[in-house]
Amino acid sequence: MKRENVVGRANVEDTPALEAYYRELEKRELGALWNFANEIEPWFPQPKSVPILWKWRDIEPLVRKAPELVSAEKAARRVVVLVNPGRKEWSAAAGLLYTGVQIMNPGEFTSAHRHQASALRFIMEGKGAYTVVDGERLSLGARDFVLTPNGTWHDHGVEAGGTQCIWQDGLDIPLMNSLDANFYEVHPQVVQTPAPLPRENWKKPYSPVFLYKWDSCFAELRTEKIFEYKNPLTGGSVMPTMGARLELIKGNTRPIRHTGSVIYQAAAGHGWSEVGGQRFEWEEKDIFVVPSWTRYRHGAAAEAVLFSFNDFPAMQALGLYREAED
Image 1 (tube, rainbow, N blue to C red):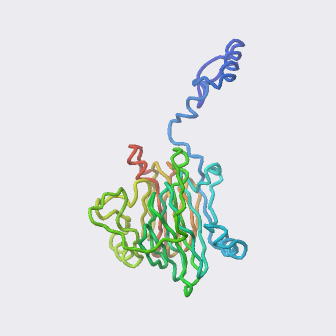
Image 2 (cartoon, rainbow, N blue to C red):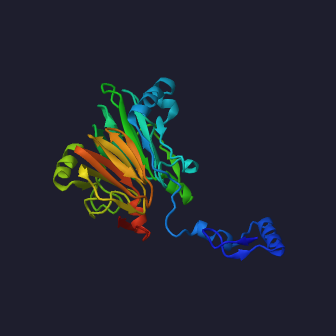
């Protein structure tokens, strides 16, 4: 049998002696690179993630049902996770990015904790939500963007006089787990005692600003068309492994592809996106993903806004970011 020189195979004829050799390798947890070289070193990125759209009208009933079945206290974090069919082993939405939709009722709160994974949250609806990050208490409103950088203590909840609140969580949990670098700790108190967080001589690798209010961000977006959430001290990304932005969509964008994955949420309006040859019609609160090196573009007849987060900072730090317009 001759192994053709195609993806994953070298131009090698399998003789009985060679087949016996392969069996000997396998017994010792070894392998012959020439049989699978292109599987582990492809000509171009071959993401396991697939383009997928989660329609809010489909998942909303399941999100709202969760509080009826599980208390915030017992669940610790009551989140409906969005899992890509191609990345189930990592519970990832795309690539090595995780996302989920968290729901909390008035008067509920989570216990304080911290982890190696960086986290961000985009508030989808509700009044009275808050988070406490390293002791700093932040009040959250619809479409606000808030950080809980890696290693920061955090807890969150909803004021007793508020309404049911829902937000999208975004974390780099799959990346941390793939690097075997994740840690998780429980705070000695159930919730933190709020205290101002000093900002003088800030040397941490993430933004000193944890909360980005919608109104001010949207005002800049109207002028710039793309608003990057930035670390004001460096002008770079808000955290070392993840970035985030708002995009104002009206008309059609140019097709592009790049290394790195993106998780999108329709923040306002409605439109469409072509991702890897599939057309997604989206409206407010719908969530969809663009896997690495997948061609995509957006369009909207009337003005619409897309929120997104990505792993571009990690790609850039490793010298792996590449893009192409096609």
